[in-house]
Amino acid sequence: MLGDISIIECTDCRSATKKDYFEVDSCYEEEVKKHSWRKNYNHATCNDRYYRVVSDMKGTNYNIAAFILGLANVKIEDGYVPNHINGNVLDNRLSNLGSVPRKINNSLKVYNKNGSPALGMCWHSPSNRWRVRYIRNGKEYYAGACKTYKEALEKAVEFYGNEYLKTGDLFFKIKFDNCREALCQLTQQKS
Image 1 (spheres, rainbow, N blue to C red):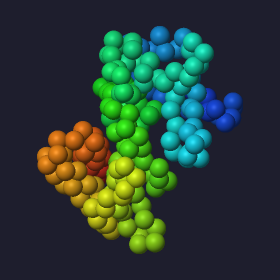
Image 2: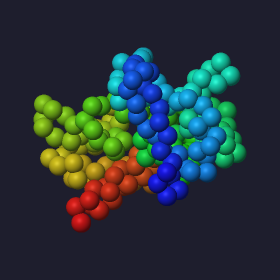
Image 3: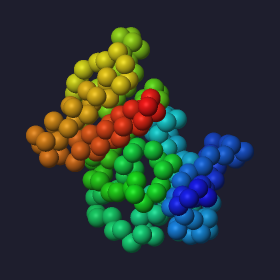
Image 4: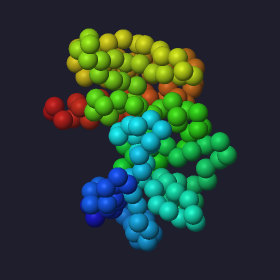
């Protein structure tokens, strides 16, 4: 336990000997530890970066985010799914959880292997630049490319912030908040 955060062990569904860990608020630790949890990868995309932490309950895979929201008596409306605000599925603190429409949640998933914690950004090897882009309804929208990660974060914050102000669309607010948080963390690391 680290302060108000508990670290819980989970197994990797591809290897019973490989272990990983996820965070929950300490007040939920006892209930969470009553179940065994595992990282379950999205085999449909064959992507090692997209997974969720699940447990078998009542004959079905139960998502840790939904479990925590249930413990906190947060109702998830029909057509909505749990969402990790910062994009890190191993961070299951209540302050990092919310719910969004399923369609928006699907469009927030980032299938890249560039290590960027920010949604809506990816490394483009051929141009040797960070790209600010998103895909919506199968169509790619491109906001630009930058030489440095910090420049790309700044561009993403500006771009997604403006789109949110114009449209009021939750999709852009989530990307804006995520990129702004990544930029703040980057700035703090360099201070």
